[in-house]
Length: 517
Image 1 (cartoon, one colour):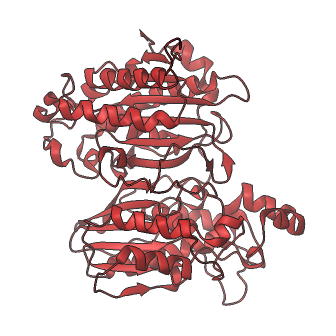
Image 2 (spheres, helix red, strand yellow):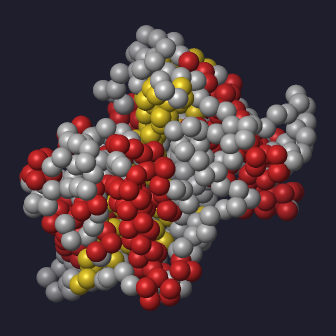
């Protein structure tokens, strides 16, 4: 195990690995979400003036969420596998497909995942595949399921019902645009993704004005992506970036802010799937063989005594060791190339546990030679000293609140953001070292705050978004790079914890047809 220091030469040599922000990216405070609203006639959507739309995204005509009186948690679930999912057929908002037997099993898994959760109300898309999933999850609860047409899947007009090869043959360039530039994709006079984002805002208005504190929403892949993105104030360019697998669960926490009206919003969890989040599959329909897995280290006794979450530096306690072992077992679905960590004892111990299990995984015979996994300690993955500079007490390790990074002073978040940027460049560099055509998987073990910040860099956000994500000790988050390390990262899951015993009934694998709507 050896150490790498961040140097100016390294930064100059590998600046090409930094993903450049999109020119139309809405950089704004996530606590005041802004939306580009597409207004259309009942028949044909008129082509939108791009410059005026960008002005709305940038906040000149921004809309806000309604105020709420009490904290509200919203749990989003995508429907189980449908017959058209299995066939590879484009569904859109058509209502011809129903759940397969695998889809029914996935829905039952989701019911078990959520069986101990108390919900006040359930909203559902009216389409059969979603409504049936909602009925299975809702079970014997007495409250009626509310269907809302705005929660239907994305409207894809003439594309609906086509197999992928039929779409390519019949629509050519239009189908290609749907695959590579969906936000600007137009068909039958409509911009489906822009319409979807407008519809998602309408859904949030209904959900938030409802006098409930815990809400279940059962809908579809694209609309759940739009709900997550619009809640966080992200534009249509994030379509296909925040994945939603069949029966994947995402959780959003809304907290009242009386002084500004619109609530603060934190993504507590993204795409908690019924099966393994690291199993072989695709990201938005493309092969995912290059990825970064962010692992939050196990807890230590000194963490429990620290005034700032997870900043103690003692060895892991019994719970931390169990968490590390469970993480290592979950990652057995992967052949890991490199494991990096900071120097904190809990990070090093978690990384060592992962490495030992990986090296022994393929070595069952007496004469077997263990597979070598490269391990490194990187100083830029240590952020505990930055966090402890905060004068604010964020103690309460057993109940770390969502969005706790919002409580830190500006100079602390600036330091965290800058250091995490260097750490992110290191990970991209490690990811770039594999030969062409070879899979490359890098595991990074560190503090939840570091991983939150690195996801922000991956998504081309700013430090103002730090409080918009939440991670637990022992969780994993997965970022795929279907176009390689110099391409855009696709978030497969955030804050996955099923391996720790919560939501851990692996009946089915998540679907590999992530691109089918």
